[in-house]
Image (cartoon, rainbow, N blue to C red):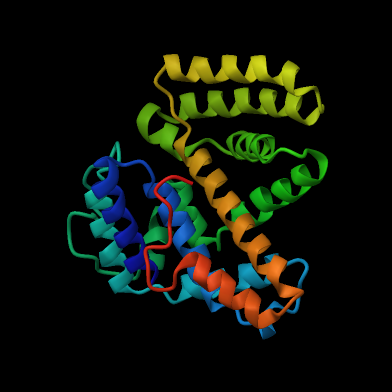
Length: 263
């Protein structure tokens, strides 16, 4: 289940590094992995564009989330000890879960963009992240620069909720505006050499202030993960739809934690 995958992944992370490095990534990638496991060769006839099929499968996975999933995710969050975690009047992770994971995420969607993904079918990944990834891979050979484009698109589209929790709405809005300026340069197709200096200056400015746009980074990794799963499936689909399903399941690991500690 999604909840079990999340809990096992965070347990593996704590054993490896004993700190929170990937809670947001795991929360986003687990439904994607489960959805890919649920895709059958028959339902994937939309190839070469698997996005509609994957998105529909994600919606089904999210709708089926249970109170047990919520309890397992609460355990994962307590184990990860993310920064800014306190107590809440509603759905406190330090208390037993009293609703389904989807209902709990829906209640938090206004203050947390990862929770928003659960209540909106990973909307930002499908409507922003994956289209940018596809476009940039066609325009720019480097996956690394494509990741930069995805990240800037997320950071420029809405205030980063991790920044909002740690520094407040005003700072988050300022960073969002700065990201829009960086995205303007990126979209001008200036040379990588020209773009590198302002990007590094932006990065150093954030670090000096102790600002970490973590939610935008999590969304970027989840987008790359979704893109990788789609590519793996479609690379094998032309040879055999059954092989595509088998190889993808093997890659994810249907009975394992399935998520790398570092993407």
